[in-house]
Length: 172
Length: 328
Picture (cartoon, chains in turn green, brown):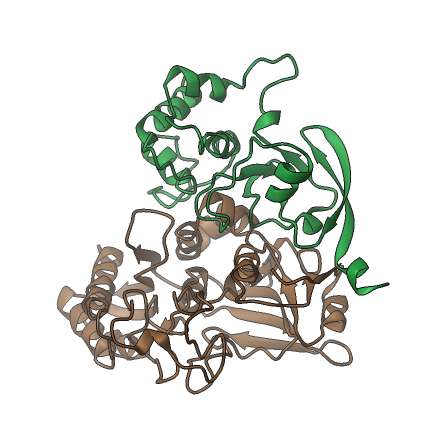
């Protein structure tokens, strides 16, 4: 096998329910695959260093930074992006509806990452860094929501309404 | 980013056999992929080890736990046995990074992450760790030293190790299991804090692992007696590296310190086991005065850099405050 062939790999992923087979340069991040190869530009590139959360997607149902994920290491993975949060009938996900209702964004650049992060966060078990009693399943208070969403930055500072929108989804 | 070949190993011996000079093992990639993008790490092949070691946490004979190196940080912190029996470890893991990063990052990778010294991460500056012999920009006048070492550093390097988990594993006296290169992938057990080195004249070596050695598991001894916790001080409330952190266990009997284990994070090239403070505490009255003087004794050896003198006071106060919290 030639040097170039060694540095490329064919992978198959399920993206928003659809199987996609692509041959990628091994350096291709999942973020660049989604945006540049699959045309799914909902997922945003912010810092490209795992620090801002704008690229958050679900890998196997768990939130992850797509900029730090190498596509080649996720052969066979099930990926959900912001384009896949709404159901097939066009009805927005309840959290997307809450973001609209509570005005949880300004410029909107971080919003896809906020949404993917929060949807997965709501199904995560266990305590966080601000939980007093580690042995309980803590209620998702606004303080817990803020801590659990600290991987998603918003330069517009829409945090108060982001927390309100998530809180409204937790306790409708 | 430099081009690289990619292969997935299905067990530890396959991973170790596939290792070549200038290959790198890939866990969750949360640090390595970033370093490759920055041009700091330039491997020509990646060996994906997320399927090569256990992703399970198993009860270990004698009352401890055996944590596979491929266990994700979030799964470790959410494990009920860890939360109930090793709260210090759960708190340390939850204090690190973000929800997204903890979902990706593995236990083995967490221990082997590189320093976040700004000069190590900037390929345009001198750094003996990244480029041996090039110098240490962090020790030049005007350097940003806020996050750098106050203990155990050398003329060659003042970097700190960024892992919170490693600090807890040091205070818990965990043992790491590694598989080495060579016939039969020989097993190597490393008692924490023995994994990470102080920089001396060879800061390019973060750990005692030989090239190609692979961490396969972390063995926790039975929970320490008494109470334990982890406290981290950082520049913002969440998603930041420690300025100083402390992992502590404290057992009090008849008003005196029966046993104590202390480790500091954010202060040295390795998790810093506070043996001087531990010796000063053992058998002494469990009082605020004892805690303050033990903390002062540990920090007497501190040699802060221009700009990070605050860490000495912070570390001293943090040790005393955490011990008071554990004895309340």
